[in-house]
Amino acid sequence: MKKLKLFLKSKITTDTIALVIFSICASGGLTILYELLIIDMTKGQWLVFRVLYNILKFSGAYFCVKITDWMRLRILKTSQNRFHKAIADTISISIYQIPLYIMSGLIMGINIIQLLIVSSIYLVDNMILGWLYGVILDWTRKKLQNSTVY
Image (cartoon, rainbow, N blue to C red; front, side, top):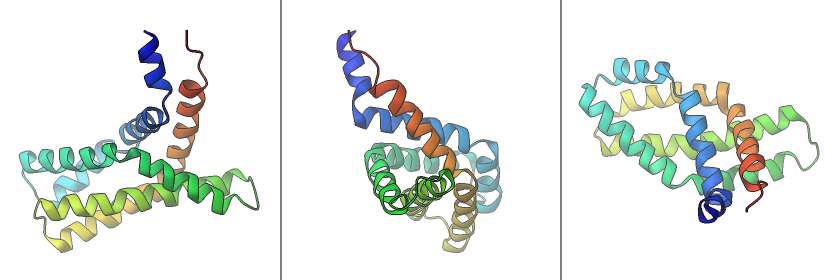
C-alpha cells in the first residue's frame, strides 16, 4: 500500500492522471462526432487513430505539464489573475496536443485537408475548454502530491 501511495504522489503520475481526466471531460461525444463525420473513416480506422493519439498524448503527459508550468511562469510573471492562468493553460494544452493530433492523423494516412479542418475544430475545443486542464492539474497535484504517506 505504501508503494502505491508513493507512486500516486510522483509528479509524473499526478500529471498523467490530470491529462487523462481532462481528456475524458473535454473529449466527449462531440469530438467523436466531428472526427467520424469530417474525416470519413470507418469506426475501426477511427479507433486505431484514437488509440495511437492517446498513447502518444498520455505517454508524454510530463512534457505537457512542463509546457504548462513554463507558460504559467511567463504569463503569470506580472499577475496572478485567474483569467491569465486560464490563458496559459489553454495555450499550453494546445501547444502540446495539436501537433500530436496532426502527427497521429498523418501516420494514419488521413487526407491533409480533412486533417487540417478537424485539427482546427480541435483547436477551438482546446480554446473553449483549455482552462479546465489547469483546474484539473492543480486539483490532482493538491490531492495526490500533498497526501500523507503511511
